[in-house]
Image (cartoon, rainbow, N blue to C red; front, side, top):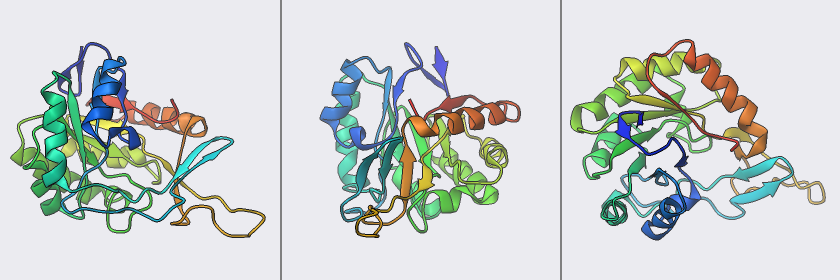
Length: 235
């Protein structure tokens, strides 16, 4: 079957996240039955991420503020190449602070497709800050499409008033698919100490609690966009 411009045996993939940080984990997930794997988001320069606690379990799911930790695109390209050598379909999740950064990252990787992280909810200057602006989304998608010859997906944030406006902007920019959704902006406070639980204070909520939000976003997008929609979140 064709999903967002690539051929897959079935539509179940590994979502971008902490299980996509190394070739060994991506290969293990693929051998466990995933038709494709999406990497952890990688950028132009190395990032250590936020201080711990950066990932906590809640009654309704998980709360994280990892801070986009990654070794940089120049290092991570070797991980992607190792996975592709195994015959596994790899989607590279990439981020940047502007069109130029997205382009620089994209031109250093050779995956089966790209997923543009326009939706991380807790990094100033990246992710959802860009993905909340339809004009910037359109230009970023178009810029990456101009320099790569594989499908480009735009991962959308639910933390906007109208996700369809963002989806239409991605489509106008030439996206081969939209991915909905990323985590929902959230936080938790320890009632004993009175302090926020996460080292970064605010993070993103994932898990069962956000599935209805994801379903709503996919439903709304389906009525507006003409490109494939890849549902993620709450599974």
